[in-house]
Amino acid sequence: MGYTNHSRDIRTFDLEELQELVKELGQPAFRAKQLFEWLHVKNVCSFDEMTNLPAALREKLAEEFPFNTPVELVRQVSKDGSRKYLLQFSDGVSVETVGMPNRNKLAVCISTQAGCGMGCAFCATGFAGLTRSLTAQEMVDQVLHVARDFGERVTSVVFMGQGEPFANFDATVQALRILNDPQGLAIGARHLTVSTSGVIPGIRRFAELPEQFTLAISLHSAIQSTRNQLMPGVKKYTLLRLHEAIQDYVEKTGRRPTYEYAMIEGVNDTNPEMEALVDFCAGTLCHVNLIQLNDVSTSILKPSPIEKVESLQKRLTMHGVETTIRSSRGSDIDAACGQLKQRQSASSK
Image 1: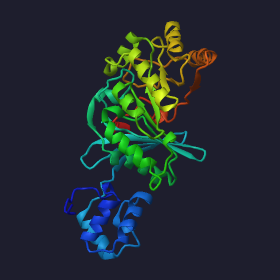
Image 2 (image 1 turned 135 degrees about the vertical axis):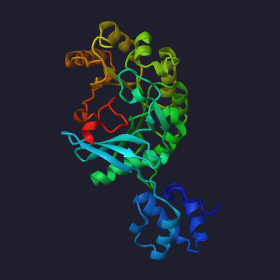
Image 3 (image 1 turned 90 degrees about the horizontal axis):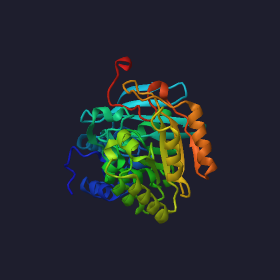
Image 4 (image 1 turned 180 degrees about the horizontal axis):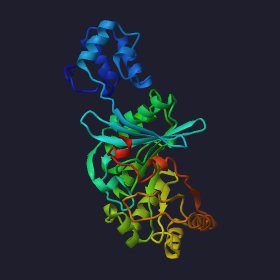
């Protein structure tokens, strides 16, 4: 392999590659295991912290290999304890990440792309378009950054920040597996959730994975014309085909998918819209997460009144559909669903 690839982040090496590396450096074989533990179990960010390695080896490694950890540009703290970070990668591209503490648990919402190409009408991320997809390591780095900032173990991760995970499928699955690895962060597969806007080929591939990862679908309307207006990026994946793909997913995996439904006044909270949603869900294994649309200042769309949200919850429950109203976290710092951007706003500089 040769270890002269200076730009390669040391944390992307697996155990075999580390074994080869220590051999090339003339070090005893057990150093590979030590290195692996520092990198993937203790998640350190510099060779200086690897106290059981000889100083000369640490210096040599530091000359050869970078830690491309993201730099925190902005950190905002919400009154509910959530924290939002603007993190910048080594090429200057930045994304937002949110940490949400709840009693003795810590959930992290990460981005899979910088920006997003889906162009959903109610989401701030899509306004600027897509910059690029992230690597698996860049996704994992967001989780590690939050864990270090809180000084706590992360117990769940939602791939619900910027981007469409299934437009970056392989890197997303790689990140899921790194987070799930019992030798690494050891986050249970059921506590790792991927949210798609309804990219059918991705749902079908996701159903084939052996792990019990959780699937969430941004639905937002069960009427095709409304959904096309709200979510133009997935127009070609019709609701009929989406419904079929999800039923296949349920049959294959036996797992309950979640539908995200952000309620928008006068758009998807009318009587026909509610009826269509009940029809779409009734008699299937699913969970509906109702969200009062989070205000995006640049959008003309406004949140439904809470009474409407509660009335839809009642209707769905009456038809045997498991439904919750998601309490929005971090909306005072624009960290809630649909509010993530890539820019530093004037007020946070």
